[in-house]
Image (cartoon, rainbow, N blue to C red; front, side, top):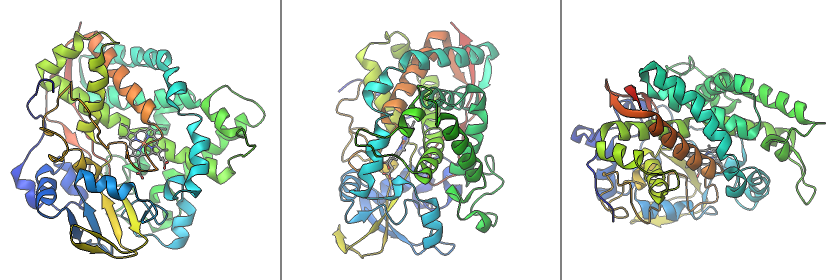
Length: 428
Ligand code: HEM
C-alpha cells in the first residue's frame, strides 16, 4: 500500500437523502453519502421514478455490480442501457451494438476491436503527445484558464480524431455535437434539455437530440470519403471487410460513429478535469508526479487511480430476462436494473480508503470502464493513454497549478464531471 492522501472534493453529509435519479442532485457534486448509505443499508434498492418511469433496482456495491454485469443473459443490454423508457420503434431506430447481448454483440465488437486494440493504440502515443504539446502550450500562455474548457475538453476529440481520421478543424464542432447528445440534461450544452422541454420530435435520434442527425450525416460523409480510398486511419480500417469477409452495414457504421463521438469525448474529458483538480489541490500529488519520468511505474498506477477517482460513467441500465434474487430482494423478469459504477468504485468493501486518492494504489480493479461485462469500454486503452500523456505533458510545462474559484459540476445523473475548473497556471 502506498501513501494515503486526504479526500479532495465534496463529501457532504447533507446529501444522504439525495434523489439519485434527479439531474439537479449531481450539479452540487456527486452525492457520495447517499450512495454510501445505500451500499450499507439497502444495496439492492427499489427506486421509484418520476415522469412516467416505471422504477428500477439500484445496485450499488462493487461485487454486486460485477455479478450483474457478468450475467448478460439474465441482465440484458438488449432492451436499453439508459433509464429512459422507450417505445420499440424508438429503441430500434437508436440501437447501437451497445444495446445487444452476446452472441449478437460479439460480431460487431470484434469488428471494432481491430481499431482499438492495445497494440495499435500504443503506436499513436507520439501523435497524441504532439497534440498535447500544442494545446497545453497555448493554455500555459494564458495563465488563468478554465482547465476543463481549455485543456480537458480540447484534447480528447483532437486525439480521437487523429486515431480515427477526422480533420483537426472539425474537432470543436464534433465535440459540441457530442456534448449536445450525451449531456442532454445540462442547459449549458443543449437547448433541448430532456427533462425540461418537449423532445418528442427527436425520439428516433441518438440521445433524443437533433445533434444526432448532424452526427449521422457527418459520419456518412466520412464513410463516402473512404469508399474508394484507404486513408490509412482507423475509420478506413473499420470500413474494410474483416478476415472472414464480413463488412459493417451502413446503419452499423453510422450508429457506431455517433456512439464513438458521444462516448469517446466527455468521459475522457472529465477524467482529465478531475485529475487536474486533484493535482491542483494536493501538493504531494503535484510534486510526486512532476518528478516522475514518463516511464516511471507510478504513472501506470496514478492513471488507474485518477480514472477510478473520476468514475465519469455513473450508471448503466440492464433489464432482467428472468426472476433473480439479490440480497433477499426479488427482481422480476422485465424489471429495470441500474448498475452504479461510480458507487462501486467507492465501495469500502472492495477498496481500502476509497475516499483517498492513492497514487500508488495496488490491485486497483476499478470498474470505471465497465470491467467484468461484455461491453467493457472499447476505448479503454485510448482513454488510459490520453489521460496519462495529458497529465505528463501538463506537469512538464508548469511549476504550479492553483485552483482560483470553485469548480462547477455537470447536471447529469449519467455522466459525472467537473464542467468548469478555474485555475492559474504558472509556467515552468
Ligand atoms: C475515461 C474514459 C472512459 C470511460 C470512463 C468509459 C466508460 C465506459 C463504460 C462504463 C462502458 C460500458 C458500458 C456498458 O456496460 O454498457 C463503455 C463502453 C464503451 N466505450 Fe467507453 N469510456 C471511456 C472512454 C472511451 C473512449 C475514448 C472511447 C472511444 C472509442 C469509448 C468508446 C466506448 C464504446 C464504443 C463502448 C461500447 C462497447 C460495447 O458495447 O461493447 N470509450 N465505456
